[in-house]
Length: 405
Ligand code: SAM
Ligand code: TMP
Ligand code: ZN
Image 1 (cartoon, helix red, strand yellow):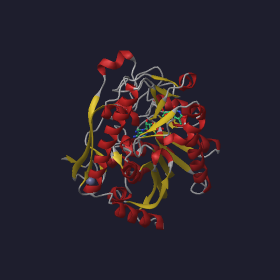
Image 2 (cartoon, helix red, strand yellow; image 1 turned 30 degrees about the vertical axis):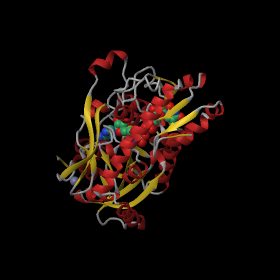
Image 3 (cartoon, rainbow, N blue to C red; image 1 turned 90 degrees about the vertical axis):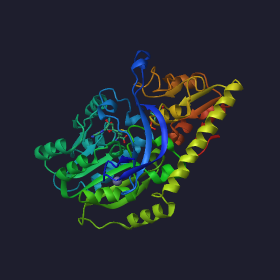
Image 4 (cartoon, rainbow, N blue to C red; image 1 turned 180 degrees about the vertical axis):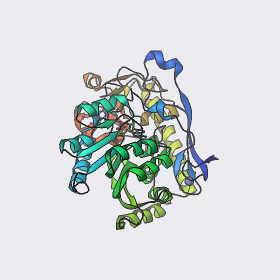
């Protein structure tokens, strides 16, 4: 057993996804030889219930100048974050000279709205390329990892933050102790720390095992987040389920006793107990379903290949690294992956080495089948690719089970 990164308890492994590459390391052909691999397995802490990876990838290997994920690539996510920013501007950021900090601001998808409103803000973003895009959008960025020392430096220079927000980033941070001491140092006495990340309840309910990859070190549940918050003098005072990225929860934390928790907290906790989210048997059943999906998906792709059908992937997601490498899906079964992100195009997918091509290539010559790796953006993608279906093309989905639509 490994040790829980938060409480030191024993971590009981329940799913082994094998040897995996960095999920966002899209390769030039020349990079293939030096490719980095690690063992991807996930377990649950017997003491605090936090679900976490058993091996940690050094952060500089994942988040650097060329980090290819651009948050603004989805119109649904642009809208989601614009609305989130406007909500904060109307509620928490109405005092005299308010100050908002974002951890992992990426290309400024959220903070651009705060900047346009003329409100004081700062985005922490260690990945230089996306940080530069945010700056060009008028966002004030610190090109650094948020941790205790950098948070203290901002507290000294800028004063306390009314809101510290983070989306799809806190679960990327194994060093939660340093992170939460940093939040403690920077947050105003009645400020809130709000973060949203993929939700273990949805991952188990949908068997979305592709949410497990190097960057997703933790798979949060309310129960495990409550235990984590309490260790550092915080309390979960509100929760909200979000439909984005296949199902997330937005947690609002305040200093213990500072704010009255809403009824939503007790409600979600009761739901988690009913779902058995902290129980080994439920997580083992999840692992069995993952193995079934692998068998079904590989069988389907082999059958289509034997019938001479063309199959391509859609969306070179970080999630798809887990799927292709766990299932052994290479260019023999999926000839290329279409993606709108310039930084991923004309590269090879990590580990599986499937070529990534611009989305225009997809429209230029439709395949018979498209394996939708970006299933979390299904509505947006299927709406814009309606002609593919009209032309007789079919989508292959593998969450919550393998099916053709
Ligand atoms: N918030 C955006 C969103 O929801 O689309 C970006 C999410 S992206 C998956 C994670 C981002 O967190 C990356 O841009 C990465 O560089 C950044 N990141 C990783 N560790 C961080 C840390 N310690 N402090 C601040 N940002 C960090
Ligand atoms: P995500 O699931 O981590 O947000 O990644 C989505 C990937 O899919 C990202 O590389 C961008 C790509 N994508 C498209 O190619 N077309 C689209 O319409 C959308 C929404 C995403
Ligand atoms: Zn623990």
